[in-house]
Image (cartoon, rainbow, N blue to C red; front, side, top):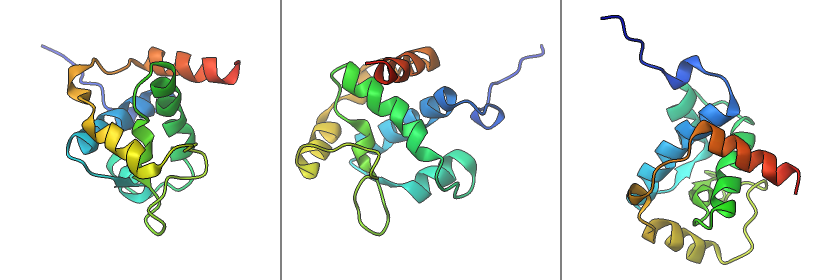
Length: 127
């Protein structure tokens, strides 16, 4: 039997990497943890890949926003400031937003597909 298990490390598209980040962030959220950009990058790429996470996290931010989900990306923070990056819009109290993320049952919903994430990102560009 010749089966091939897909690996995120073999795929370079932003929607596929956003799906990978989704899994990591859901696990962190369900354990009431934040992720630094550095730790998320290390989980995803095996090293610190600076500057690449913003666009990838954008897919997740748009998907959450368009589907009335808590803003999952607010748990990704700068290791020095403890705050989300500038590309993550935070209009409410950060602690209250994090509590919404931590209180939500992420394991009860199906994760988005790569196509769902791409569509949400495209919708955000054209709205």
